[in-house]
Length: 150
Image 1 (tube, one colour):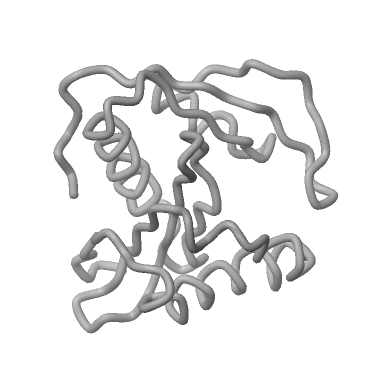
Image 2 (image 1 turned 180 degrees about the vertical axis):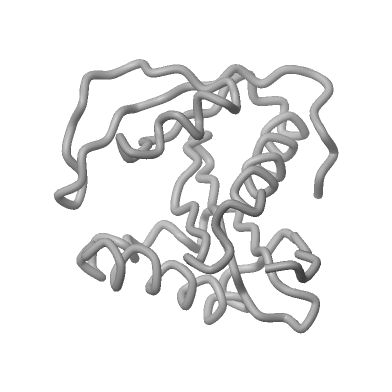
């Protein structure tokens, strides 16, 4: 895809339809995550980011909980490999820095550990299952300054 991507902080519930669309497509339809696990009731308290095309088509999302946990990063299959995930992650890291947090963490699908390692996350757990998918917990220290991406 060669369209420009726009990233912005999203609002729950105002942007919920777009966020739900991306997450449902990636996690529920592609990966078989049960809907009750994907939509866990924590979204209203989370910070969210949404990546869209210039025409407003949602292509990616990410959330960060008040605990500093990054999660629910999803990029629609046609848009993967174009830096959307990296840019969403930069938004979350910038927000963590602005909140004065010293570290953030996530539960990475084992197949995605390399992606997060390229963004300075390191493994802090053995492999465990979440929604039937192998994961590893990863941590990143938040350093100054970051990209100011969002």
